[in-house]
Length: 214
Image (tube, rainbow, N blue to C red; front, top):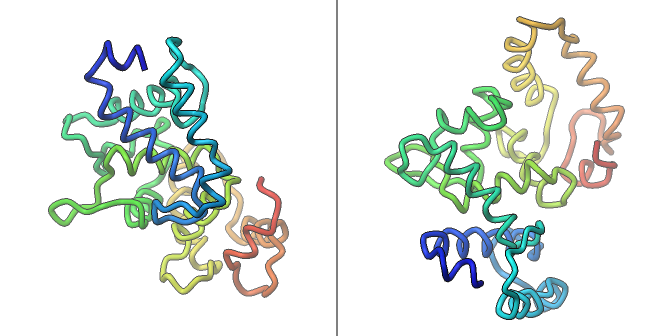
């Protein structure tokens, strides 16, 4: 808290980032609401008390640590080339050196955590905090939900081989310029072998949550 008092330019983005990350990690829902059980398990009061009393610059990865905030905020600022406080698809394309294809970005930006400005899906800092959280911690239940909905193109609650193939073909066009790629049939077979869905024709969200993260 002492550091934030000395650097007021960081106060607003710190509060926004910390609260967004706190609700993401503490709540079991996507509504930024906590149940009594979630609140008790989150140790919020002890974290706030530590912040109030400590004069040290916390570098842990806790939601209320300055180190956790600054890592995410610096990444967002580095991507926001036009400095409008939002990330477009073009700007997000530079995330992790271009890790996502056009179709992948299209699905991410059409997800529930992203807002629309002037008809275009854009990521605010709060949106990016959630996106970075689900990208960094893919084994979390909410991360599984996020990526499942990105794969479920028609929103019917199931991921089929057609959904997978749509993304794979886009990725393959990029990768095969430098390396040989597996046929999609082989990739789909391996995915279904690992997930072991209850119904062999598609993968449900419950199937993904049941299998070990890999």
